[in-house]
Length: 291
Image 1 (cartoon, rainbow, N blue to C red):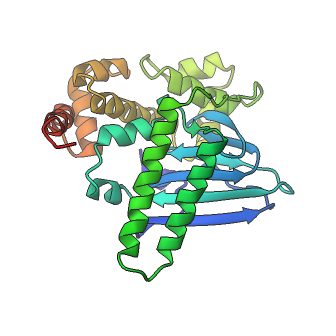
Image 2: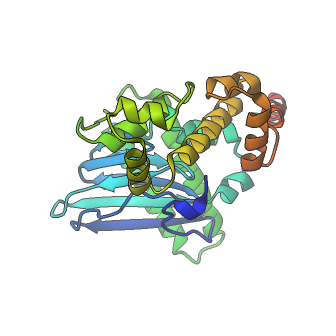
């Protein structure tokens, strides 16, 4: 995906940054992406959040997970209290802690759902972890920075366990009259099929040029760029979860493995099969590590 045509927002030069904001200003932010991971814990508030074409109804206690380069947009009304902690987390920090990519992609994958809803007791525990991170971030005590980084990793682990253990689901909300969100979600749900602008425009009763221009205005990139990026991201998630690369290739809409392999290498710097081998090597090593 050509970054020049996408609305990038925010920056991160450190391992992570933690913000705690409380206001009633509402959100007036266009669809954008980040080159780092973003986690928002809603301490108090009610609104909605668009992530990768899915619109989630948000309430107090929710944990919102946004992956790298994933388009998203918050919707909170002005005049309503919105109290939230926001974590920006660099890819480099997670690599430094030697966290398997499969675990990272599982946590931030849009296919798994981008919002985790803990129960009341768990939500209080999340607040305590975030307050501890904030305290360590501003502390001059021994190894405070390391303690803060460990707190961030702990928060991600607790979030992953909460998703695994909770029976609560966060409802998706998709307004019937929001054509561009419907188009984006249609694309995401049909990556395994042939997706031509002509066919999509006919499905949604729009002129092809009109639809392409509206898509770029709404999401900051050309539709074909978005489709390629999401197919590669989805295939990478499958491979890191143990899927054979050739199977992931065809399940993500590619008709040629050689084209897929070339585009995958351009995006991730390694061949698809090498990603699988590295993931399997980690799993084999983990079996022999002490508890």
